[in-house]
Each structure stands twice: as C-alpha cells, then as structure tokens.
Image (cartoon, rainbow, N blue to C red; front, side):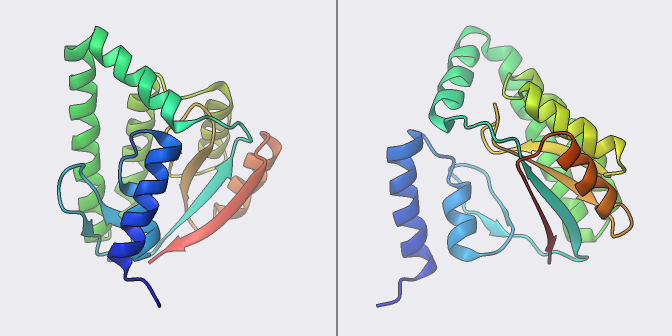
Length: 188
C-alpha cells in the first residue's frame, strides 16, 4: 500500500523525534511533499510558488553534529538571555518572510544578501562552526550570491545561491576549502 504524503510526513516526524529530540517539522514535510515550503512551527506549512528557478549548491563539512545537542544548547542559551535570543529569532523570521517574497516574486538576486544575513544571525545564536565559516566564505569569495549554514549547524551542510556563470567556480572553491561532498541542484 502506498502511503499518502501526510502519512509519510507523520512517520518521518516520529523517527526524527527519536533521533533529534525536538525536530522542527521542516525535514519531514519537505521529504514527504517534495516541494519547497514556507514553514513556521505550529502553523500550517505552505508550498512556495517558485516564480523563477534558481541554482543552489549544497556542501558537506564532513562534521557530524547531532541536532538534538545543538537545539538543547540554543534552548539553554535562550533561557539565560531570552530577550537577546527573542530579538535574534524575530530577525530571522523577518529574513524568512523577505526570502519567501523574493522566491515567489522571482527576484532571486535579493535572496543572496538575505542568506548572508540569516547566516550572520545563526552565527550569533551559536550554531556555526569553523568548518561552516570556511565553506560559506569560500563560496562567497568565489562568486556565490549568498551562502548560509543549513540545518542545526555546528557542522553538517551549508548552501550557496549561485548563477549558471558562477556555479563552476563556487563548486571548485568549496572542494578546495575542504567540502566532503558537493551537490548542485536547481529549485523549480
């Protein structure tokens, strides 16, 4: 029997709860529905209308970082300084709203600076790492429009927004900067 996207999403979410502790709900939703989404925890997710396709590069730092640990440490930091972290989270929310608008309006060139800003905010909440910083910097210096860590951080993956013209140089720079794997994909 083939499972519905909703059933797949629910199953993946339960597995993530075992593995990660407090998953966001993003991964299971994207996997199940196979479309870019706009996600706000505790709200209904919405499929993004991609007006103009764009190219992203995903690079792996090779550093494993359990999501559960990163989330717990950010939670503890928030408990120590709630007003500071609430401001940072609010700023991230504003960046996400602006990025959604750029994707849906097809103004892809606006996404690069938003990715850079989101990465800066993620660094401030303490989820970047030297390896992520190295790859983000390499991508930007090689011509990426923007780059940021992806997922819980502290290792794992980063993503870079590129053009057809800069794609090759960014892939090369990421490999030279130590990426353990590099994938190029187009988001439609």
